[in-house]
Amino acid sequence: MDEKVFRRRIIALLNKLTPDNINVVSDDLIAWGDKSAQETDGRILRTLIELVVDKAVDEPKWIKAYTELCLRIISKTSDSVKDHNLRMVNGEYPSGGHLARKYLLQKCQGDFERGWKVTMPEAKQTDEFYEAVKIKRRGLGLVEFIGELYIADVLTVDIIKSCLRRLLSNIKTPEDEVLQSMMKLLATVGKKMDVPANKDEMDLYFSRIRSMTTNDSLDSRVRMLLMNSMELRQRKWQGRDSQEAPQTIAQLHEELERQKIALANAKRLDAQSRWHKDSDSRRGRYGTVATPDALSSRNMFDALMDEDESPECASTKEQLTSEEIRAKVKAAIDECISQQSDTQLVAAFKGIGETNYRTALSQTVDTIMDRRPDQVEQALGAVSALAKHNLLTEDAMTAVFAEYSDQLEDLVMDVPHALKFFGMLMAACGIPIARVSESLGKLATKVDVLRPPAMSVVSAYLKHAIKTDGEAQTQKAVEDAGFDVAQYLCADYRSDADIKKTLALQDLLCLFPKYA
Image 1 (cartoon, rainbow, N blue to C red):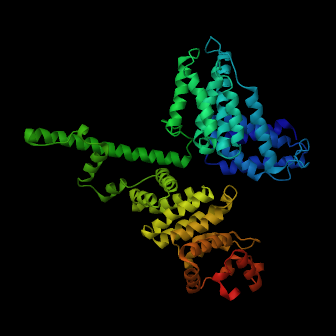
Image 2: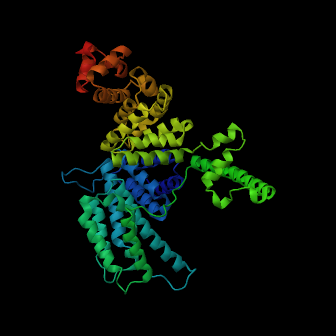
Image 3: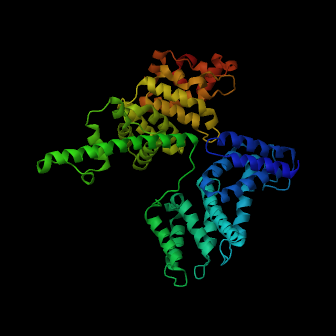
């Protein structure tokens, strides 16, 4: 295939990429990469990877989206794509995701080693000046992209260490571009990398940075930036300002709705303020009126809510966008995991308000699904606490899980343990075994494959029930509900012998004595 043709098609698809359509566009791009199965040199796949990297470093605001795209390419590229010009240690040709990751590493390494040193022309508003600015921006974009790939576990910590050592190799007469790149890389990876296992290495980096802050040969602006990097570490890598991420269309609509509500409240506040002034003039020195300065915005809105108003207006205070709910839920789960406590999530739900409980539970499931297995185990206690406090009805929980189950099969591509996590969360929420099928939604009927996904969910659900309630109580619940595990097995494998074999492999035979 003519290179001009597939380059043009790939670039056109990359130009369409947004957070809203990443699923569709990534599949189209991967399909183009898979056309390399008809080649022996992986030419199309290599070009795809190179163009993705070039777009990422050119558009730093979209770096997270391009990082996600790289993860999808690595996980979904067909194993039939091979490069016969490369050999692995075992003598075989690299293929599929392994080959895609190799191309990605080669591209990043090549661009990093070439560097991006440039002399800024004195004359501004010239083609040479704008080209120099572009080169510097691309250099900073590259190190940020490398950092994001490390955060996504595409690159190893040893690669990041190698980059930082190179950027900090000259502390007496360092180049401005190199120092800026080093600080950008540290700001990107610092939170994940600054752990006890890497403490000695991190201390060495900051020892060199500290020595440069007293280097009078460096520009004062650069030394100030170096001190900012040191301060960033002291703040546990919590920046004062976070970069605004690209918004989806749904998020933009939510933002507009939030602005409308804020504008309506502001008008009411202004009207109330005028009422206070009129009242003050009537009461004279015997009246007491709270001025705007005497009330916080929160208390002022509370004061307004005390006035006669319709129930429709009162409910507006409790309305939160899904992003606001997600942020509160995520913060609570992070705290539950870090402090190994189960109370924060319950408190977050109560603060969010009863009208938002269903959305909050959906966001809770979504947030936990992205965590490591050990963190999921820790978060389950917080989810169980929701059930103990009876914050949601069975109907609400069942509806949330049934709706979420529609995306499980796609989620498995990015989260290998998604089915297991989903079953554990169902059990932790206290969904009764009689409503398991209902909670699985359409997933419960997909039994036309050798390993139906619903069985993996049910297995995890039952194992967690045994762990928390005990074998005897779980077995009784299975019997009382007349629960038949055969309905989740492939139709061709529902004989007693097949069912027994499956249950034995899952260590669940104890719950179904009739198959023992």
